[in-house]
Image (cartoon, rainbow over all chains, first blue to last red; front, side, top):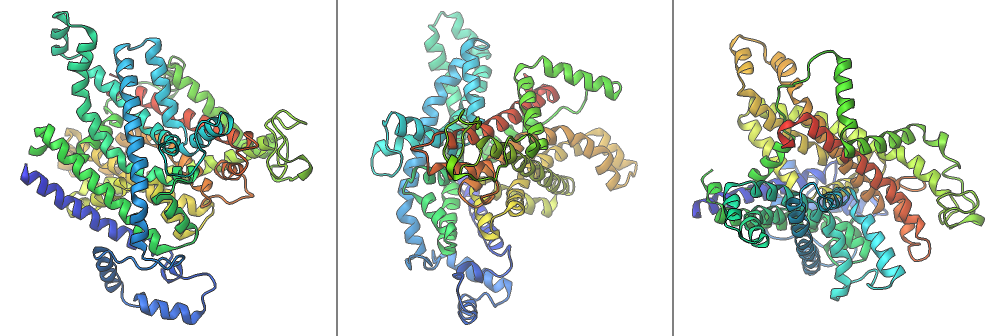
Length: 305
Length: 305
C-alpha cells in the first residue's frame, strides 16, 4: 500500500509540474506576456521597465526557471487592481468555494442514489422512464441557465430564497442545487447501470431465494457494492464542480474563488488569475490523489496494477 | 485509479470492429433509418436536431424581424404582444429573431470546434498509440493534466489571454478540447495494433502510412463519431457560458450566451429575456445528446447490453 501511495504521489507531482508548464505556455500564447500585466494606458517606459523587472526580456528557459521558483515558493506577485498579495486574496476566498462544491456534491449524491436505485429496480417501468428523463435533461441543461431559472422561480416569483450573496445556509441552497444538477444526472445514470449489473449477480439471486425482503436486498447487498465506484467517481467530479463553480458563483454573486477569478479576468489582473488557477489545479490534483488512495484501500486489485 | 475509471468510460465508446451490416450504401442507409425510427429517444433527438440545423442554415431569411433593429418605444414587451411572439428585449429588439440568428453562431462554434479538435486529437492520438515510447508518455501526461483541469476554466483562461471574438473562442475550445479525442483514439489504436490483421500487415512489409491510413483510420471512425456528437453539445454549452460571462461573442451580435447575459439584468421584471435563449440551448444540446446516445447504441453493440 505504501508503495502505491508513493507511486501516486510522484504522479501527482508530475501532474502539477505539467500544470506549471501549461500555464506558462498559455500566458505566452499571444507572445510577450508583459502586456497581460500592464494597464492599457501604460507608457512605453513603464512597459520596458516592467519587462526588465519581471525578466520577460531574458531567454525562455530562464523565464521558466523563475516562474517555477515563484510558483513553488507561493510568490504569485501583487494584484494589479488591489495592490494586495495575490495568493492571500485567493486563499481568503477558498473556503466559500469549497462550501459550495462540497454542498453540491452532497446534494448530487443524495439525489442520484434514490433515482438510480429505483430506476434499476423498476427497470423499463414508468419510474425508470422518469428517472432516465431526469438524467438526460440534467446532462443537457446549461448550469448557469438552470441557476437563472431557479432565481426566477424561487427568488423572484415565490421569494423563498435570496437571489444572491453569501453568508447563510439559505444563500447556499440555490447555487449548490444548480451546481449539483449535472453531477446528479451523471451519478444517477452511473448508479442505475451499476445496480443493474449487481442485481443480475448470482449472490443476489441467492439472497432473493432466502426470501429476504426487497429493501434489505437492495440496501444491504446491492447498494453497498454500488457505493464504492460511485464514491470514487464522485470524488473525481469535485474537480468539475470547482470549475463549474466559477460560472455559478457569478450567477448567484457567491463570494468565492470563482467570483474573484472572473473579476480578475475581466480586469486582466493576471497575478490573481494565475494564483487562482493554480489553486484550483492543486485542489483537483490533491482530491484525485486521495480519491485514488481511497479506491486503492477498498479495492486491492488496483494497487497491484 | 483515475486511469482505470477513464478506461471504463473509454469502453463506452469503444466499438467492436466487425460490422454486421453488409451490402450497398443505400441499404445501409435504410438500415440506419429503420433503426432510428424504432429508437424513440434517438428519433426525437434527430427531429429536434434537423429543425435546429434548418433554422441555423436559413437564419435571417426566416427571422420575422431584423435581429439588430432597435425600437425603444417597444422595449421589454412580454411574449405574444404586437407581433413579437417571444417579446422584445431592453432595446426593443425581437427576441425570436435574435434566437433564430443566434442559432448559426452556436452551430458554427460547435461544428468548427469539433472538426478542429477531432482532427488534431485523432492525429496526436494515432501518433501516441502507434509509435508509443517517450512521445506517447509525454503526450499522455499533457492529456491527463488537461483532462483533470476543469474544462470551462481552461477555456476562460485562454479566452482571457486571447481576447473575445468568434475566432478566439473557437481556438480556446479547440486547445481545451482535442485531448478528449486524443485519449480515446490512442486507446483504440493500442488495441488495434495487437490485432492479427495489423500484425500481418506489418510482417508483410506494408508501409507504415498505408497501415495507418488504410487499416487503422477506418476502424477509428465509429468511436470518433460517437465522441464527436457528445462533445459538440459540450462545446455549445461552454461557448454559451463563456459568452454569458462576457468573454465570448460580444453584443450586439446575437448569441444565446450573451442574450442570457443581457437578460440577467432584467430578471426581476422580464422573465422572457432569460427563458427563451436558454430553451434554445437546451433543445439543441438535448437533440445532440439524444442522437449521440442513439449512435452509441446502434454502432456499439457491446454498450447496448
